[in-house]
Length: 187
Image (cartoon, rainbow, N blue to C red):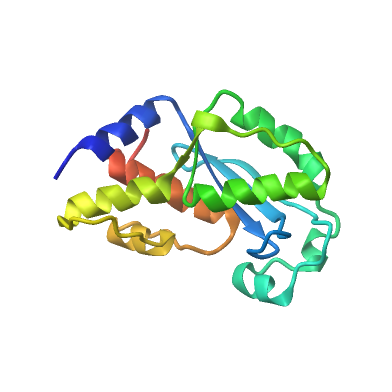
């Protein structure tokens, strides 16, 4: 097995990255964040917040993550929570299991509230893409095979669930990342 992905994960862990996940009103171009969870590299919660969207949460989204319109009624809006998220992410490496999706949801949440969007640049990294390379190297297949967060956790022997709640999924993402780096106990 090539050690390229393992070494890359170890280098990133040295920078004390954060891991995050979002839950949303859906998948389309109008969807926005209804929950954000951020954990450190050891899986300790740094931020766990519901977010009140501009539009109602559709029933099909609630059926996935369990977040209802009543639950977000008194939650902060994206403009109210964003300064804290931005402060946490400032000058940090930040990983999420599907960076393309979560970063798009952040951008869309900005757009829904007329906030200017600033790309996270090289600070953001996709654990799903790194895990696909790791898994392909591990099982010796010649092509990249995408894995869900739940499957990645199972393949790594991690007993945490993929609950579709932001902090839980960020914690599982952090654990999968530590597993790739061969650092199951700590960063």
